[in-house]
Image 1 (spheres, helix red, strand yellow):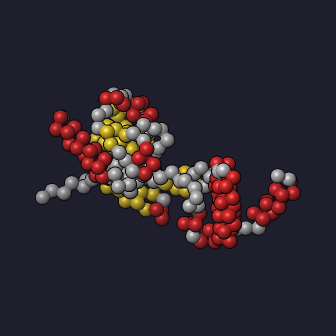
Image 2 (tube, rainbow over the protein chains, first blue to last red):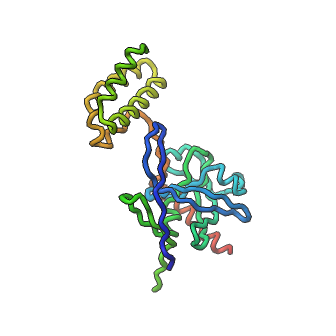
Image 3 (cartoon, rainbow over the protein chains, first blue to last red):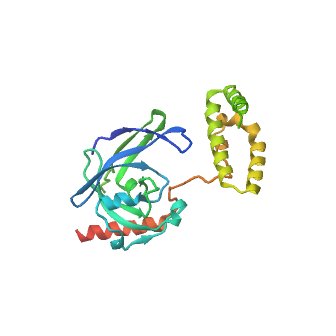
Length: 142
Length: 100
């Protein structure tokens, strides 16, 4: 079992200039030989992972080649999204495959949601300490 | 706006606690954004809203929910309840696993 890694909440400002702290996770996305360091928002309420359009392009994904079309809720219901799979590496943990709803907009954060980020990682939030712990999921053997 | 009016507003804001000042500034920013977007009829409605809400402003620091103005749009990007999309992604991962 891997030891959990602790990350701090990062300060973020909204449009009105008001600051708050949010659980942002820095990690690396990979597609074949292309790597990109990104920051994802841990969002336990999101059903899926969401990938902004430009990040998919940076990693060599071609929109027209993605055939799994899906509809999302919230503001993204008006935006076309397609499924893509990328490799993700967090700290020194083994790489995992993450499936994303690739949105055809850059006006959206990179969201790490239930399918499948929270399937792959156990996360414990300590809002009172402005920190969260993360480690690969525990494999329960029968 | 005249400098006298601006001075009056500054004086009013300075009389409030620091936390309330920040919330008031956010509230005013939203109000001004609303004014810029609205038609004359909507402006009248907004002014009525502000008048009705004015007495609540000193209490904003005690109730975060009051910060949000129901007349404005807030971007909520989290795709809640998108279970069908989640199932599609799960299927993609399963197929990707089989292909390797």
